[in-house]
Amino acid sequence: MELNYSIIGVRLKQARINKKITQEELAEKLDVSVTYISRIERGSTAINLKRLSAICNLLEVSMGEILDDVSPKSASYLNNAFSDLLKNCPPEKLDLIYKLAKIIVES
Image (cartoon, rainbow, N blue to C red; front, side, top):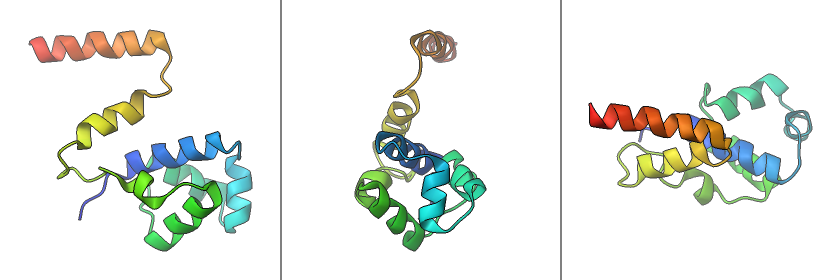
């Protein structure tokens, strides 16, 4: 099954921020490098289920919440992906994204 690791990373980052834990603190608790945590949050590296489980346990978030609709084959994949991406976007950037999307859709 193909997974979108960028979406997983965004969700893990948000869960970490919600718990008020820094990348450094999370890395220390997992005995990994800060660079590794950063790559996971950016979606530039795959994460195995064992490591994902450990991170989810530390952040007190379910793996189901992190993995929900992260496969391009899922019906609501793009809706959830856009929602996650835009969740913490400042209003001025949301406006710009909307205008660009509108131009693309209408062309």
